[in-house]
Length: 460
Image (cartoon, rainbow, N blue to C red):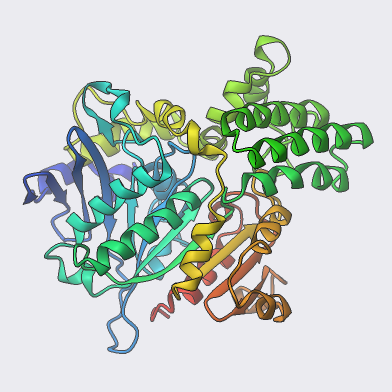
């Protein structure tokens, strides 16, 4: 079996744990060869965040470009970076525990977190939901507290530029965390250097995203004129509610819009519009008479990611057996993702709030910002992303718009154009072809090439 062959996830690895006491509020463990470390940080009293750091076997120290570290932030909110991002998208092993040739360890060290607390293996004591983060700012504060602990007295991390790379709702966490981290760096609390922020298919502007759905589906023949009119009508209602700061009402209307999209399109998949929802998900969506809105908003993202797992028992089975045994520090009665649904509910008040202003702040501070978008994504469609970019007040926007797009190729170009990139000063935008919401899954080669360009990794 693969689990017996590979040290990374073998049961024997438990015997090789090196336990280290970092601080009274933190505990860590790792493999004997030092290639992996993982642990918990108590970011607030009774709130414990799980992290997992992989050191790349391809690390190059050439004295010119320092080797980067990528902090991967998953979406949801409530989806596990240590689970989905690691085993489904960019980590060293896939869900069958086989090596991934396109792992991002080819270009950087990788730091996965289960963020916010309550996600994945992270937890709040006693299941007390009052301890969960209820705003993006609070989630950013918790994550910054974790970084402060990890970087303290760690010269290797301190010498490696940190790139915060996000997917979906993780984009909101990325921009708020980057600003909080910069403040902590300025105050001398965080001994790190922020290399840049990359926002992948991110829920930065809910308004612009929902306004793009109807026209895109109409152009792709998934809805007719009547469906287009219905989608546009609800989207305009959301726009008016957001303008009036009625975020709870806007979220309810968003649920109505998602239901309308599914009904009018015969269950198009929000994460790859060339596909339909799976038969199991379609059954869930048709519960309660014409659409289970709660399922759409709460389970769709993780359900789609989970459907990519080929392992018997799925990702849940893997995380609660082999992975949990390897880690050795997860509370015995706690299962992976046990509190994730509560995380989504806790952040309801911020779910529909935009984070365009935070992107603007990062650009004005000179932080390198990369935005990348999958051609086939619907939930955070490229059109909506381009529309919110035009709302930036950054003084380089006009020259960015006037800059030419350059094609992106892989493998010497024999597979044709894989994407495009536009760049001016500290803003980059990547159009990734042949990919939906989860770009590293759908088209991993240009995603890895993009990472190398963003981080200027010295790896060959």
